[in-house]
Image (cartoon, rainbow, N blue to C red; front, side, top):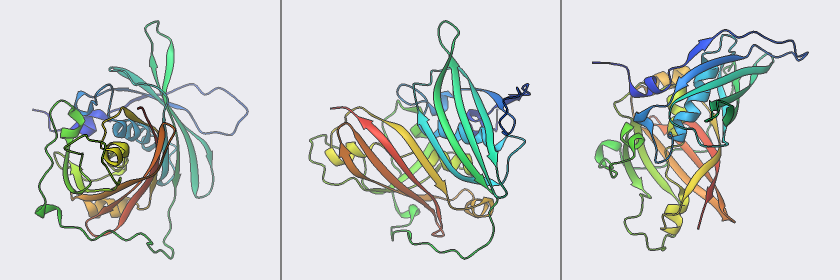
Length: 286
């Protein structure tokens, strides 16, 4: 029996050396990696968006020219990622003394064998240094995860079963009656089976929240993320200290307007350290 964690299986990328054309631009080497969608993280019509974001970040972290650790990641879901093989293209387009700027694309072949871009992304990595630091966004006071019941969602969406979620407030409505009055959710979460937290797993967790419009309207309308940006506030040492423990996530929307809404979220570890903050724009239909 395989002992590889399902997330590690989903993030496996095989890289191949690529010839580097002379473009006249001082950029780092382009690295192209081959991957495959994972049934363990399948959503209703495609992969869980969090694992797509994690795949983009994984391609950066596996690049031989990497400088530092992730600082930010923006992922734009340009089109549906179909089941099967895909290609990830990652390139550092500029490297400074302490920051490095990346472009990433995920490409699949269509029925005629032509390349089609499904996902575009940018990332910034950085060599962090110890300086004055403070948090202006303390973790909310909530019950401990051990005191809360685990959420057992309906079967049929594979990726949800890959996470242990213990809601505090703002669960998916039990009655779709259009009477929602706010968009705030708080929940404890971690990989299932438990897995030591790293940057790709954190990127995936940042997109775990169901669409805020479902909660605000109490109406299950079609919705999907268009673009998400995740800001990483910690380094590898803080992730190692978090280990396999729970992470508290909080998400809310600011504005629902003309078929789109934005959502902001924060994730803290059990010690109260803010790990990431995120912002995304989501489309919805009537």
